[in-house]
Structures are given as C-alpha cells and as structure tokens.
Image (cartoon, rainbow, N blue to C red; front, side, top):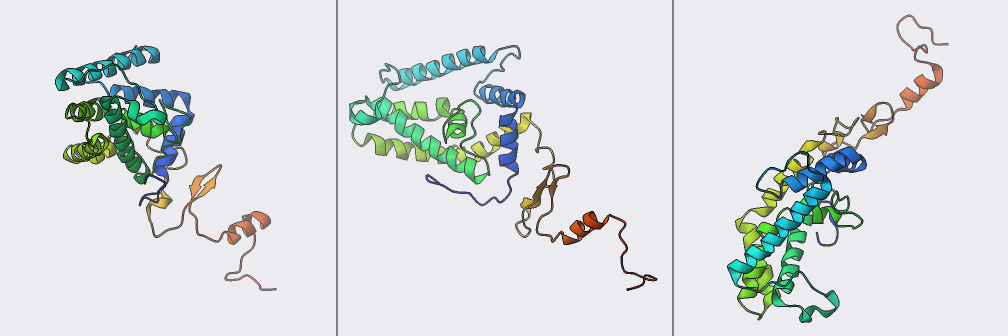
Length: 249
C-alpha cells in the first residue's frame, strides 16, 4: 500500500463520487466545510467564510501543540524540520514527522481500499497524496501530536523506532482504521450518493463485467453483444423479422 494498490473493491462508485464532488465548486466547498467541521468539538457558525474557518483551524492546531507541550513538559518552539538534515532537528519535531508519516500510511491504505483516490484532494491540492493529507488532518490533534510529545519526553534513544511503535499501538487501541472508514462516508454525506447516470452500480457484482458509458442513458450493462441493436439502428426499429406468417424469401 505504500507504493500502489487497488484494494479488494471492484466498484468505481466511490471514486466517481469523489471526482464529481471535486469537479463542482459548490460541492467541493461543502466537502471542505464538512472536513473542517469534523475537526472541532463545537459547531462552526454557518456564516463563517472559508478564510475565517482557516483562521480558527490555525488557533486549534496552535492550542493542540501548546497543550501537548504542557502535558509532556517538552519545550515547543514551533514546527521546524529539514529532510536534508534530519538529525539536526529537535526530538519533538523528528517524532512529529515520524508519527505523521505513520498516520499518512494508514489513511492512504483506508482511502485506496475503499476505492477513493489519494490524489483528488479538497483542502490540499497539487500532490499525489492530497486527499491523504485532507483525511489525516482530522486526527493529528488527537493522535500524532500528543503521542509525539510523549515519546520525545521519554528521551532521544531510538526515537523514531519508539514513535512508530507508539503510533502502531495507539492506532490499534483507538480502532483508527475503522474510524477512518466511517469518517470517509461522513465527508461525502454532504453530496449526492452517486453521480448522475451512475446509480446502477454494475461493478458491484464481481461476477459481472463492468458497465459502459452512454451520454444519454448513463451507465448501461457491459459484456453484451450489441450487434442486434446496431442492425435495428441501421434498418429501423420496425424492420421485418421472421416469425409466423412471414415469408422467407
């Protein structure tokens, strides 16, 4: 799953729903607002602009760092790291990067296995993992941030290894993978259940071939020889057919 994977699902319904929600500016904004709403314990006023919501999100994240610093006793000077000089970073920033990497991995696996695209992001954009970052941000304040500070407070030896193990245990104990699955459904609950013309999910039955796209009919059943339909179109829908009382020659 770190490289590529399609999961066990064969239906493209979730991917089409995601693409439809992303392509329309109004539905994309609904999804963005829902993602932000899910991060806060208290309801967000409906009249807030997107810029105002981002401002509140910045305050929420800053408070999450400050709270983790107080509870762990680890001094916090801000998020700062350099991939090219990894060992020069302070312990808590290294632990945060490692913990977030673990979180991205489990979010990536959930997204792909449920048939969504990790690249079609709503808040984040322009990266192959944009949607992974969108979903991971739902959980950082309650999972990776406090866990990274806790590990950093325990000392420097084997910092990255201990961070990965701590995240593994925390994800299992909180049933995070199961939660992600439900939250993905919640994210898209603000848009239609299926794209227009795709309400017949022919791909859902693994024993059947996929559907065919038609600009007028939407999805039509695949795996059928349509030569008869072509003959009817060529000769007209009322072309003579053999039957009782019809001469052969």
